[in-house]
Image 1: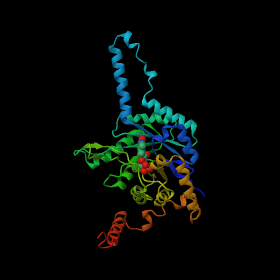
Image 2: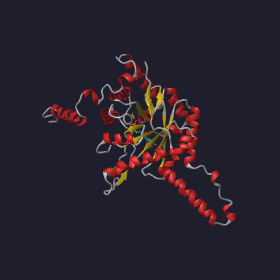
Image 3: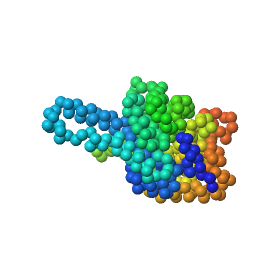
Image 4: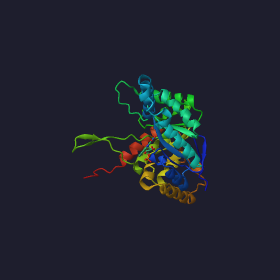
Length: 336
Ligand SMILES: Cc1cc2nc3c(=O)[nH]c(=O)nc-3n(C[C@H](O)[C@H](O)[C@H](O)COP(=O)(O)O)c2cc1C
């Protein structure tokens, strides 16, 4: 069975790629993921806020030193003694590259174009095989239009591409008026892939303490339907590569994403819940299913159930027809 796939210009042995998470902070866990069959690894993110903080600390350190007494300041650690978050990230990237044989995709995470994005160059020099840029942006300002939000993504991508020659994947929010148009614009701006979708963490309200309580819930399989729909719509309509992220917990979830048209399937919550061995389990399930299927390779089954199989019907008309059919099929009086 040929499970090979291509993502961001990389040849991968299979489509299973752990997405950005704390799992890549440990070399041992990363190695166990590779041993379980991971085809590549996306690192946890290096955040804009962390890079800006490092920059501010350095600024104030240099400033204070020049103002202080030479005797007193000689007790201060020199900059070289204080590894910054960026240094630690680069070291971890280098260690992952030395330990693993699979491609390592570094992740930048931020919301504004500007100087911090040039750190992409350091990630490239440290050996990253590709970059993911996660724009985790909640558009809460009444003065910021949808067009402004879209432009932010394009500007950030273009700025990053000025500093790196590596392929770049954009990790997207599902909250665009036209997801397809946004992906098309990113392709034109030079993205090599999109990762769909970012999962926004939603704060809850605690009625006992009357406080807002931010919570991190891991996903469930039901959430995979969101990415599955958009990947099915985009397959064959864009040339960049498509990664599905969100709600993939089983081999069935992963296979459905491929049938919809994904080039790779990201795993996170299921690995945090069950450990690296879960990846081997999912891979085995996929191989067993493929053995009994009419397909001989992942390439053959990719996109077989994409929206394209609906013929010439537009994506919107297709979705609307399904919607009407579904509402119609609900039995009257149910719930009585
Ligand atoms: C604990 C945790 C940490 C995460 N850290 C990052 C991160 O650093 N950067 C990022 O882009 N996504 C991060 N994610 C998002 C995941 O990569 C993934 O896109 C999301 O959890 C949806 O996939 P899942 O349903 O398989 O969990 C994190 C998710 C979790 C649960």
